[in-house]
Length: 335
Length: 258
Image 1 (spheres, helix red, strand yellow):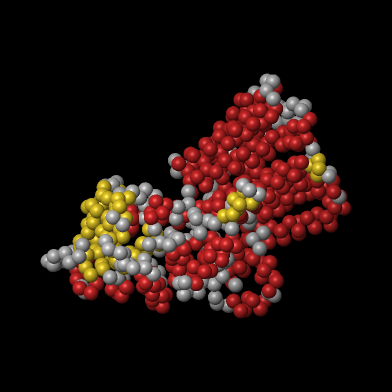
Image 2 (image 1 turned 180 degrees about the vertical axis):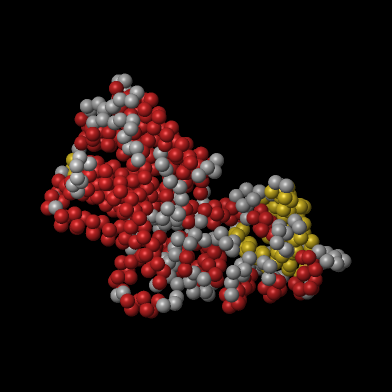
């Protein structure tokens, strides 16, 4: 490769090794943002602050872990925000009608599987782009949630074991919400990196025709990833609804783009074929940091809530990190 | 391996249409044990379709397939592979972002059990086996953990071949194996093909390059507009005759070997 010796001389060896790490872009960005906020406000260094940040991150991150696999197989899902509202509403409405909450959760999770199967079958078997399929089901599932809840707030029953597991519990001071997120992330890391399904996911997203020619079941691989993403959206909805003690049919509107944003800034390629769940984990954390950082540190003139800036900051971040990742990719190719 | 009597694979009366397009009409084709057969024809003659039927990618509309004398149905690439028929495609063979060893074992991953139920990929074993198999092909592909993205055309062929050889392919169909390669790399691939024959395998080579066909093949079959024009032993024919057959000029000679 031309010029490789020149570039090699410019960076010592360990720096090259660092550049090869897929998640380096998002890790750098997170460290920079976190340390600037810490420098601006001493509150940012407290455990309480970080527990809020990680709780915020977990809402996005639990779903984003599954979305990472789906995007690796070259599809994505806009309906996650709607499934996020629909599944807990099904569970809570059933509980209100006297059904055991665990049965309600089971029915809700079955519904999330069906949502994922519908997304997958329409996309893969009928050959409709997932942008269209899941745009349609996004509205459809949202309407189902509105109808089931009759537009009102639905709350989980007071079963304490259920509430502990799905929202209010703590282990050594760490909220179960965060533990769910970490557990789901570890699960998705293992699936993507160490199982046949993960290998097929990367192969399907990287070169679908080649994968199919050697016998990879590309359709099944994609459908499974749609189901995984949908199930995690339902799970996150149940956890969030239980923690807040209520779920409205309008919760989670717009979260799908934050989730896809977290995946992309984490270093997963929207073109499929390459991705990292660890990057997504860090990406979700960065969104949490920025969310809380802006709300607490930025003061806008007049009565404008500074939370309004959050989505603008996320947008700027997506662009910046995309540029950073492209730059790192060029560097890697110079080797 | 000792040569065995009779063809390893035989296709009889194969027809295949894609909508109004008749890609193949009543085509007969066979390959003997340890034989290198060249399959030639102009663009659109049906070579790739025939290979795809042989490898189970497309089902034939009509016709029969025999493997070692037994009638078989090839309804998926897995059926073909289970018989020992492997196809190596020029373009759609490899996944660029996957490491070499993951490509070699794609769709046939080696796994081991953890905690009694968890099947995880055995990366160590796949890497070791990949190194061993690539070693028999005498082309240096570097470390097997690197992705395929940076490999040369010859190295890519080598990775594709390693995939087939590891599973003891008995019949290899190679679609345009030298199309994208330079002179040195082409020579390497042609040597690889001769290597495969020495190991007792049969090879079907699809290519436009008649010089390459004549330098490695025992026999040459010619397709023209979806029909089998004929088959000649390389030692009994000339580039001019094959060219005439491809173009459909002056077909006076009777079939020499079909």
